[in-house]
Length: 151
Image (cartoon, rainbow, N blue to C red; front, side, top):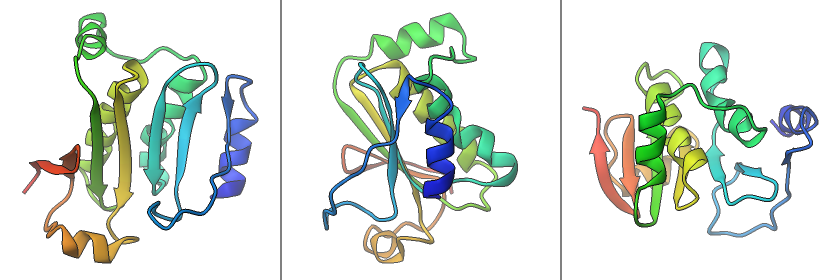
């Protein structure tokens, strides 16, 4: 995964791959996408391969300066959100609906500096999934609390 991330970071001078100090509170493996000189962060504890990889790369495109393919009115609504929003979306790599939810939350994180989005592969973090009693994906938590479940 690190080799792929290095390759992606090398494609634009607007994005960089940072190293994190090991912190027991941070899920590993993990990475985040940050825009240089801006407050934009989209985190991930998984990478969706195959047909879903395009959606996983969308934060890289946004960080690299590519405009989102979204209606201007939607972007304006996202930018006008008042408050701090930390989304965690629990996914499965075989889920049909997960990529759309991840992409929507990434769009929000890339459009508003007060929104954070983290994609978490439930298969990699089973104890956390069990502790939070996650039974279906995608499951979204907002600021540490259940927000939405697609059951």
